[in-house]
Structures are given as C-alpha cells and as structure tokens.
Image 1 (tube, helix red, strand yellow):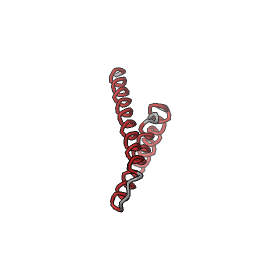
Image 2: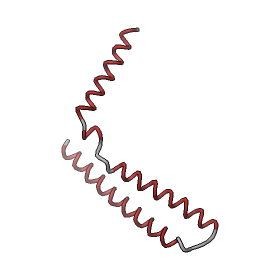
Image 3: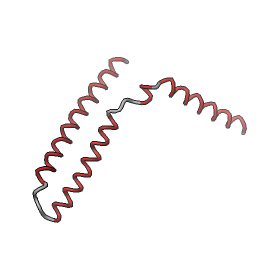
Image 4: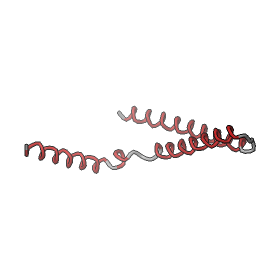
Amino acid sequence: MDRALHDFDRAKDRMAADFKTMINDSEDLLKAAAGVSGEGFGAARSKFEERVKSAKAMLADALQPDYIRGNPWTAVGIAVAVGLVIGFLAAKR
C-alpha cells in the first residue's frame, strides 16, 4: 500500500512539473504575441490568456494536500455522524 501511494505521489509530482512547464511556456507565448495586432488575433489571445489563468488555478488546487489525508480522524468523525443521522432517519420511518 505504501509503495502504491509513493508511486502515485511521484506520478503526481511529475505531472505537476510538466503542467508548470506548459503554463510557463504558454505565458511566454502570450508575452511574445502581445505586440501582434489584429482583431481576431486579439480575441484568441485573450481567450488563451483566460485558459492559462484557469490552468494555473487548477494546478494550485491540485497541489494542495488532500484534506482527508491531512485530517483522517475528522473525516471519520464526519462519516460516523452522517451514518448516525441516516440511521436515525431510517429508523423513524
């Protein structure tokens, strides 16, 4: 189990590094294209810029530690509480 988690974390780190490289290259492309004019090109550039910002936000979220992994007893407590509420409601019927 530990090996599988280790392999998963390594793969996640490699993917995050590749994603960071792609975002950096995309930002460089946007900077290089800033001087080019044209209505259609400007619209495409702004759409691409929005997508790059969205990708950066998604990457930041993906790199946050997993809540359940960081707080296992809280997650277990919430699951138990939800199970008790569902059991109580089912017993009332």
